[in-house]
Image (cartoon, rainbow, N blue to C red; front, side, top):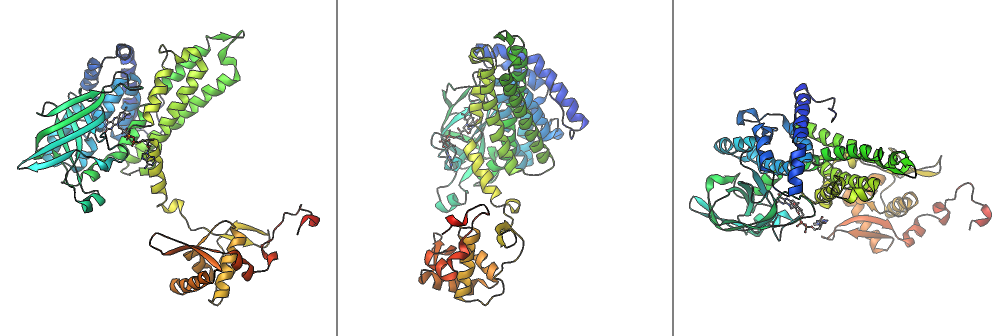
Length: 509
Ligand SMILES: Cc1cc2nc3c(=O)[nH]c(=O)nc-3n(C[C@H](O)[C@H](O)[C@H](O)COP(=O)(O)OP(=O)(O)OC[C@H]3O[C@@H](n4cnc5c(N)ncnc54)[C@H](O)[C@@H]3O)c2cc1C
């Protein structure tokens, strides 16, 4: 039984129980479709009948209005039903947030109840043969012709290709390099199955997703009315970004439930497998591996629902959504690999769910933006946040005779601004941070003077080769350090020497 979180409201708790029971009931049948490698239409229909496709959709459009937490609960449970989970996830992601935020009222009335009903599946179509992680590089074009748009191009790796009726696509609507630079060259559209010129080009066999069709689509002069355009022309990139946090969260959450199933199998199995006259659950190594899997399950789940709560509170957890997608998929692959190891050869057979989860975890590391791209996002956004970039200085503390992080002002602050003192500031920094350059602001702050006056002195010191400067691409001086010549001029050799107390005098020179 999955545990509820203390911050869930009563509706969410009751919903989680109901969905879990529902998934338990469908579990065996889902295995049947997995083994037969058949798309589980009857199960999808049952999910739709129960209204689960509407978990996160507002009630006025026929949904259950349970927010990102509700969607996460459904994803967690339906992931256990293999294809059902993956198709549920993409169908829910196929433009829902984008339509809710960017579509006109009439468009919302037309499309969102379809999402909620789940009778017609949806697919999201960003990736192309030549545009993967670099999603802005889409080459599929949309050209306006009267009241219609003419679409030409290809999409690939589309989950639910063929079985879906509604395809949320992103196409290029301008070749203007200026617009391209500002990401103003893409527009989003909905194309429905059956549109003349719209074809399923290929279904790709994959390492996992055994009964989930994944394929290529081709568009040859496909004509769609302007009312199928979602959001303004040239705003497709913003439309795409609109739902990304939600999408990344759900893309991670869909793998969590299966990890609990795998853990249950491990307890069952290791209590019944005897080697060296002991059940294998008595070996500390096996216990450690299972404990590790449980920790990963709990941490991944906690993180996912924390992220869902932030979304439900109206926040945009950009960093946490990327962390959720990346960390959960990594946990899944690592935990599934451990689960295989715990069961030895049996873990490698298809008769237990471990091998499946190893494959799923690998897919998880690539779909919805690779984990390298998630890391890039986490780094880039964090580098802009004050929380990670608080002003910080190390100062030499004479009492302990060591550099320590300090709020104190520099010992040089207030000295006359001249070359000698600025050089001292920079040379002293060699004693504090021997391998680092100083920013111009570090120098300015330490001597306590204006930028331009300090810069002039730095240029002169550089000319005399007393300091070395690092310049940005435009040639602007951004970082400085003392040269060996500058260090020698600023202070005597002893100033830089430092030995621990235990170091023998005899060995000092
Ligand atoms: C099972 C499955 C289902 C999918 N479903 C859908 C779907 O429904 N709809 C859809 O539109 N797409 C879908 N995709 C596509 C998926 O989003 C892309 O595969 C993914 O974004 C990566 O693109 P790519 O495969 O072209 O790899 P590439 O972008 O070519 O990347 C190759 C490698 O280079 C690395 N890399 C690329 N750029 C950088 C960089 N700047 N810094 C560091 N490393 C980098 C990547 O991390 C990766 O390791 C699906 C993919 C799979 C496998």
